[in-house]
Image (cartoon, rainbow, N blue to C red; front, side, top):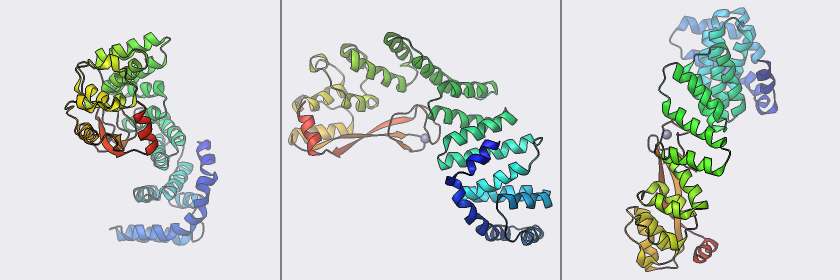
Length: 351
Ligand SMILES: [Zn+2]
């Protein structure tokens, strides 16, 4: 617990402390002014009159010491600050609550630590967020929401083994996380693969499970064995591989016989044999090919975004689970026609 307080006192948050003291009374008064319960509101106003100049973290503790039944109200105030995006104020109250609560009130402490973790996540302090969630689970282990947040954080930080353990705990609780489990298991086994062949065979075995692995498999093949890549692509001509094909140097001799319409089109652009292009079924690629066919020197190319089909979140890379909504295998490769600089155009022409 002490590490949280120490962390909190570093300059990143410390600068807010003085401003908070000044703003607290006004904010609390405003908040409680909105409460329907007038009696309650008057009671809180009386609290505040007793602490006119010191409602910092220690001030909240004093309020709690004098009026233990204000815990719930302060929790609501903290939540209101959080919902309003004022994370520093919310954090200050939560830390005071943690300081005041007895170590035996595990469930309440766990709940507050979870809120503290949320604040750190929102503020981009992922390590502190992990610390807070872990401490919360240390008090109440079977907490689905915290376990889910923690597993996502671990995954984001590349701590796949830990993410796997969190997912296993969720599965034990009866939550359906089998797909996440298989994904994480796959990533963990890839990381521990001793040889390239082993890595390749793991990827091959996971191709049917998720396009995420099929893409990784294709990348490895394009780097090391383009004939195998061509075979792999023969029956997989869709947009999911377009950005990869677009970014790799394709061996013309190997790919020119490909029956894959997307491969054919990409190769036509790369070799500047636009007449050999075909309808790929991908609108942007077909428009680009047609434009290049009419005007070969036109400085245009393709750019890519990766969109979650569930929530619309954009990412700069292909993802298995959406960082925003957590949806699985909902990533769509979204090509767009972009202008390319002269340098890029020259680079393309060197093909
Ligand atoms: Zn999403």
